Image 1 (cartoon, rainbow, N blue to C red):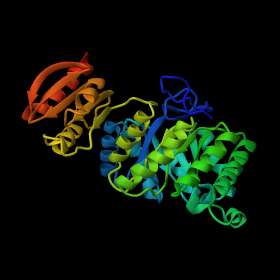
Image 2 (image 1 turned 90 degrees about the horizontal axis):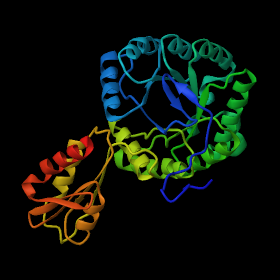
Image 3 (image 1 turned 45 degrees about the vertical axis):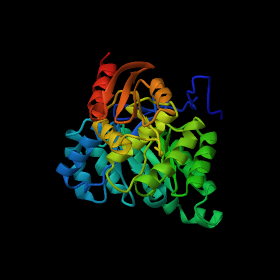
Image 4 (image 1 turned 135 degrees about the horizontal axis):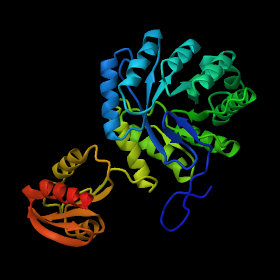
Length: 361
């Protein structure tokens, strides 16, 4: 599949059948949806709702919670009543928790065919159909069916694909098609190969992610390569960047991937030079402060923060709003036009004010 459709740089996505998670459409003509997952104890409703609220403020559009026991499944009802984005219940091993979560108001359930047991699927399908709840069939390299591990000699891409196709056939034979797929591995190349292969064989929406990707830097690298490669191929309908740490960081990285590929322009796109011996302003502190002040901004704006006269004026002029600094002063630009000269101590406030003015206009 080709990556670019025209000179605009817009990625041409494969059209998949639409599935709804609550009010959010995934697949079809919907944009690529950004998801995350809480790291709180789901039984602690207050902490879980607080984290979901922060995720939603950061731009998370669908959220998943772990449901390890009946108490957590019971909490789904109250959590659902106190949040503003759709809720997915993440189920492993115990099919009864899937039934309980659906009845308690989950908008979608995530099940793993490798550990839930297909003999339990008919009842899950029946209850999901009764409540008009969608499902995510999550195939994971770490919990594949034993016969597939033996057949392929390990959790290969082919093994992931066969597991997914088994589940698709099983659901379709029972008249259930209200689901999306995910094929995940901590090995980026395996995840890419599996998603490419299953995308050729089916039109169900695909959830993309590199599982167990590590802390912020490692996860950003792995996710950008894994998720980004597939999105550039036109594959993928919803994404989650897995980070060991604050899940709010997952949302900003996810939108960064989408912005970089011109798939969704959400939030500020900050460009800044790596600095060198020519830099005569505190670019590190300036960039960090601007990034902090713009955190959570939903509107798109390309912001340039440049530290010298070599690339600075050109890069800043190409941005919506930018600064080119040098010798403790700089020029504030807006789309190629110099707005005014400012002192270094004014940089942050002046830049933020100009960004706000640009967006409001």
